[in-house]
Structures are given as C-alpha cells and as structure tokens.
Image (cartoon, rainbow over all chains, first blue to last red; front, top):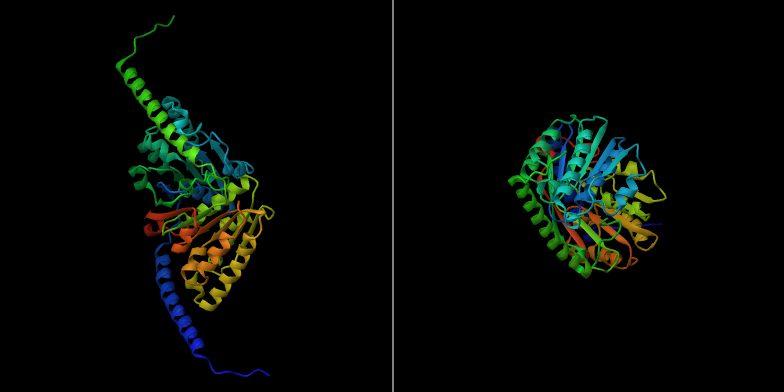
Length: 213
Length: 213
C-alpha cells in the first residue's frame, strides 16, 4: 500500500517554477497570436541569404525540399559553382519532374580567370532564371550564388530586380551569395546575413562532403 | 572579304579590364590554393546555426540532402517543432532508408505551456539523438531546435557536449536554433549567427509553405 506523502520543499519549488513557466508562456502566446493576427497576407516572397558565414546555399536547398514536400515544382540555377558535382546536385537530379536543375557556372571566378567567358555564362544563366520567372508552374526557384554575379558586375542589378518584380504573384524566389547589392536587399522581403562565428577550415579541416558540398 | 579593323578605344578598355581581372583572380587563386593546402584533415564536424534570422533549420535540411546526395545515411530529430507537419518532414519521410526522421516536440513552448511535459519530450528526443551518435552508420545527423531545449534548461549542456564528443570520428552533426549556449559553441567546428536584416512577417506576410515551413 502506497502512502500519500506531504509535498517536500523541492516539490513546492518545482511547482512554482512550472507555474511561472506556464504564466510566461501564456503571455508569450498572447503576443505571438497578436502578431500572427496582423500578418495574414499570402504572396510570393523574395528571400536573400548573404554574408560571409556558412549556410547560405544550404539554406536555399532546404527551402527547395520544403517546397517539394508541399507538392510545389521547383527550379534551381547555380551561377558560380559547378566545376565539381555537389551532393545537392546529385540528390536533386533524381527528381527531374519536381526540380529543374541547371548548373551554369564553370567553377569559381579565381579558377576560370576569364572575365568575358564568366560574363557570357552568367548571362546565359540569367536567361534560364528569367524563363522560370515567367512560368507560374514554378512555386519556388533558387538562384544560387546570383549575388556574386551581381557583385562582380556580370549582370545588371536593375534589370534583375525588374525581372523579379514581374514574376507570378505567388512564386517564391531564394537568392544566395556573399555581397548582395543594396537594390536587391531593398526588393527582397526577407534578408539574412549569415555571420561567421567560427569555421572548421581555420582548424585545418577541409571541405567535407555533406557539409560544404 | 572581311577587313581587320584597328581596335577601338572601347576594345582597349575592355582588354585592360579583362587583363586586370585575370591578374586579380590569379593572385586570389594563389592565396586560396595556399589555404586549401593547409587544410587537409578529414573528420566529422559539428556545425551550429544560431541567431534570430531566417535560415537556421533550412540550412540544416540543405546539409541533409547534400549528405544523401553523397550516399550517406542521415538522421533528423526535431526537438521543438512538430504540431504542424512541415514540408521538410513530408519530403524526407519518402526516403526511410536514407533518412530516419523523428519529430519529438509537440509544438512551440508557448503553445504547450507545460514545462514538465516539455522536459520529458526533450529528454526522449535526446535519447533518440544519442542512439544516432553511437551508430557509425549515420554519416550526418541534424538536431533541429536543440539549442532552444538547451536554452530553456530542458537538457544539460555538459551531458549533451559529452555525448557529441563521444560520437564516431567521421560523423557530422548539425545543430540549429536560437540562443546556442557558449559550451556548445566552444565544442563546435563551424558556427554561424543568422542575423536578421529584414523579414516578410513584419510586412504583414504570414509564414509561407516552402519558405518558413
């Protein structure tokens, strides 16, 4: 037979802590519910990830599979990478009906060292991107490393922004790369600066499959 | 018959610009090649994405598909989210052999308002995570929103770090969520702070499928 013991001081402490937690979370819920009530508009958004830290492209690819999970058709144009096939490319090429994947770059700018050729490649890549921006069957498109092509002056930022603004109303666009120009930040809905705190590379660890590529 | 015209001043400008680009990129290549030569170690890395900006979880899911593209087995444990099925969950559950997916949370802390229950759920989630950290068949594991569970004191950070350190040598771990504790940052190889510049929510646009969930 079990006895009903009187609550110990520890139990009372724990009860108080739980009650304070409940009250704090109830207040937080009121604030968040209120904010949610004020944000009720649905529309296609432009998301820009920039900065020098790790996570810009991988965040873009995470959004691609989120969209695929909701049954949306997706498109990817990679502007700068491309010399080495990456894990994301190998994976997403398995789903040609769900994700149209283009690698237009021939590698990093310091590898090609050929500005005219890089410009021609960037312009060809933007033609693919524009085609997607005119096709409402694409629910979400990712233009990976576009910011680099803009920063290097390979594409005109005003022309790019005009094409983005003319896209179908519910289409989402994700744009990645260091050095996003101000005109693109102004046109975007959500912008994150990926700020490096530390990086494995500085510890003598090279780029790892699954993490950096 | 075509004539060989003398180069115009514009052509000369363009040639000079191309040559300066080539020389700059050649210098950059030397620096980068040198850095690459100094980073030759292969090992499992701990990647932490934290901060208040958008892109933490999506970056983690991007690394999951990168790893899947390289034929690695992956694991996901979601610590806090879970009340609403997300795009990433719907998508990744299509590949049970390639990605073991666990959603352990019952929703955001301000929705449950029940601290004891949240703690029990977080501890059960960490048991799943520990099992993966002892199994070398997992090439990359993602512990989504683990930082929140640590910040709220639902799990002991020293115990979590000890389990991370004891994992197989080539296993990669990605940990996401606001407020990563210093002990976890110290233990990590790569840490990025996702710093918000602007967010669609503040423009009255609610969370969009494919972007936020």
